[in-house]
Length: 157
Length: 418
Image 1 (tube, one colour):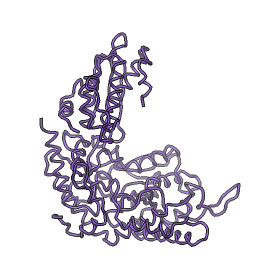
Image 2 (tube, rainbow over the protein chains, first blue to last red):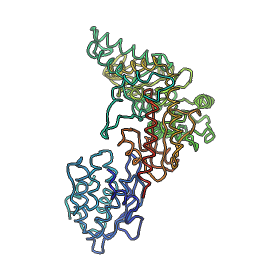
Image 3 (cartoon, one colour):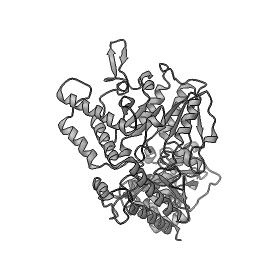
Image 4 (cartoon, rainbow over the protein chains, first blue to last red):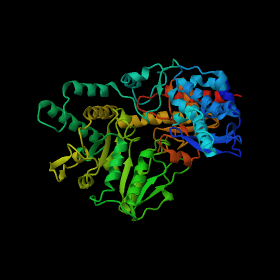
């Protein structure tokens, strides 16, 4: 499960820390273990691009590294592309190992394919990703920009 | 087994638990160190349930055929065996779905104005900061329903109930506390808390889930008003918990759940209720589970709870010694096995999240609990989100403790290297 790339992201997380400005901030908790993340999303002036994701929190190597990978993949993407990235990572991590994942879409996220075989750890890997999805929807709604740019918005838990 | 127990024939005991021989996904034999969450079941318990189901199964307390008679006898004999195991009389035990339901039963009845001990506005409910959520949230809810105030004893730095943190007065109507903390292992000063509660006329509620499987418990001797424990943590089945209540209290209490079996007479307008304990056992009861739990009580009794306690103290001592010898490991709870301490040993490792420690152990077949163990406020008190917890039962060995300690050292090595 613990690929080197996961340990690297865990020990040296990318884009960590809370920054201004931001369009939405969310706080997500994994109630089974108490891990938590506070995550902010900033959008471009036209509301179409994820210009920054900043975060703070505490959790296991899987949750922290997965959030770091998220920021690498999604900062700079269009809102629609970001949601597709989230959907691809979610599909892989929820597949019990049946979906290998596409490195072109989820980047270092493919290192988490092994995590998918451990059902108890799937929520760890998704903590930051679900927080981002929630924050992105809130940011987009407050921005008035989208709502329907991608159907996966409707999948939010 | 190279590191045999001083007190028990562990080879024989372990042969009663086939699951302990299992090879796990990493290829290693299971080392089951999570009995505080749920214990494994011996063949004697499984056989007792099966024997009952293939010979005597019928509906308890209903009708008049032979199977019903045998089922009712098995159920009531089970009640008597379990009562004897914890130093109570059989009419003082109520069977519930689990210990959580037993606490809810008491907390709901304490909000019922038919009960002369009913809690109301201006009254105070007391619990402690070391409780499992099951002995906190029902009291939060009772306070919310009744307008009473919830207060609590704080936890000390070594995870005990801090007796100096709260003064009881005559407004306190109930004091609920755990016998053994499911996180820190600290054993509560039951006599002192009972004495203080009695001095102000408050009822006492003892969560005995973590004590009954691990030490001799004499509920009459402890002199508490209510106590509860679960079947599945004491080598018995899931789906069965036990509420103990002093006879005069149970007889004075209105029902919690209502329906069949708990009645005396029923008309379309009104119902009168059966005496305790039937009054609190609405619906068809858990019959084979009671038979299995009684077998578990007999199994433990045959070994002897003094011997069980001594054996587990040896395991806890070895665990505390082993983990204390690893730099960066901090025990959350009393650090001496001799110091009023039960089975669970919870710990944190500097710089490594409990989930990651648990994962490394799991890969080696060592099963521990990670997380907040349903005691989130206690973890907050210590400024931590999660701990890893090893907890023991009669079947564990010093070899398994050695595997735990070696696995923690390996986790530090793995996550520490740069």
